[in-house]
Image 1 (cartoon, rainbow, N blue to C red):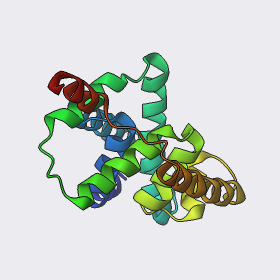
Image 2: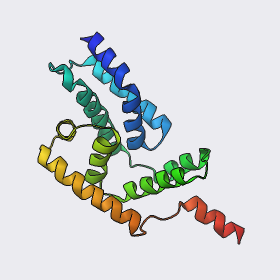
Image 3: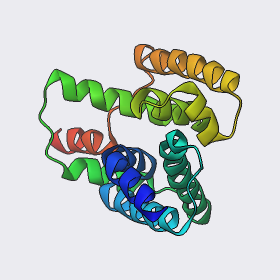
Amino acid sequence: MRIIIEHALRQNWERLFSYALRLSGNRDGAADLLQSCATKALAASPPEDGERIRAWLFAILRNIWIDEHRRSAVNAAAAEEALEDEQWRRDDRMIAVITVRQALERLDQPYREVIELVDLAGFRYGEAADILGVPVGTVMSRLSRARLLLLNAIEGGTVRPFAARQRKRANDT
């Protein structure tokens, strides 16, 4: 069983890390989440259906994040500092990524979570339903609503510049 879990972890490591990064908001937090996920998965018994092991790993990761999130509030300032520290090229693609991230942050957790699982992590509706513990119809409904809310947030101008940019502008004047 351990070999099956190790193989599944290797196959899904990048996607798990990407999902952990979106949940935690920073690379160190994502690495910690992923390490906890691997430890917990290796100590558990995987689902008998081998095709469900990927969703099982993502569910473990999500549950660890929920447990940690309940213990301490997410520090939005730390996430902004991490973004400031990175070297971003100022091209249209990066601006679009930042715009979508900001819009995603404005969505309520259930909507943001379903977009992260289906659109960003590539899960099928049934897999996302298993991870979230809701019916498939709920996933489909939330996803439709989430995409509309995301589009409205982007088009409606509810996305605002990062606080660091606002401070820089204020200092420049």
